Amino acid sequence: MIFVGELSDIPVGESVRVQGTVPIAVFNVDGELYAIDDTCTHQDASLSDGWLEDCAVECPLHAACFDLRTGMPSGPPAKTPVRTHQVVIADGAVHVVESVPASGAATGARPGVRAGT
Ligand code: FES
Image 1 (cartoon, protein in one colour):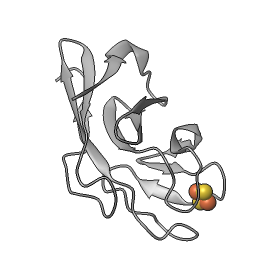
Image 2: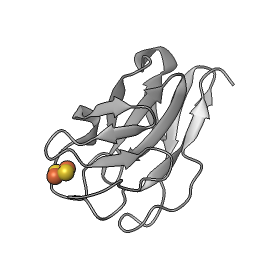
Image 3: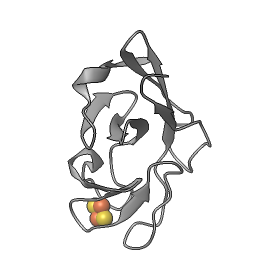
């Protein structure tokens, strides 16, 4: 597991980036935490620098949107999903369980966990 930080380090509407085998972005959407690969599948933009809207993040470079629950892009220019990762919260500490393989389609890992449960 990859230590992300304390739950209080990730306020609602914010994101943090951590290093797994690749960079991973963790988002807090109204108290629900989601983790996806940080690098956009279109080019090399960091999705943790993007904009959250509902349960999706908009890439800051060319505005492709990715569903944080599935990793699927909603439309061009991105065509390939990002991986989703399981988030684990224990005693106020947030961890990510990185999905495998390190490239390819989303794995179906449970992507979101409610803070405080
Ligand atoms: S780099 Fe993300 S949409 Fe182009």
